[in-house]
Length: 162
Image: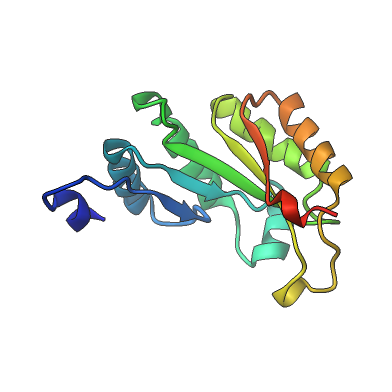
């Protein structure tokens, strides 16, 4: 990304998608590049509850939440287009409205205008035994995120909703 930005010609937008658990120094560099290029850093916030995050991912979410807090502190440097976005996969039985509400409250406590995408889940790989996200679950999660104070909530992968 640094080489692409330094090269002559049309300047690319540098965008990142991450689980947020990187070293803070790498996040600073990613935010710098995204801010200067018009790009963004997208955090996949898998769960707010530390026990649920550990069960789903095998690691703590402490670093992810700390890094997201840092990235949110830089949003005012360039509010549009948003340099920071968040997403959560709505996994039936695990990431439903209550947990989405916790994540959304965390985000809203940092900046209510950070875009938040709720993504429909489709069974595959190690979670083939779970159902796809229902339309009802997606609506409940969206309402929970809005009730938590977020202003930019989007439901994605709607073609997967059942």
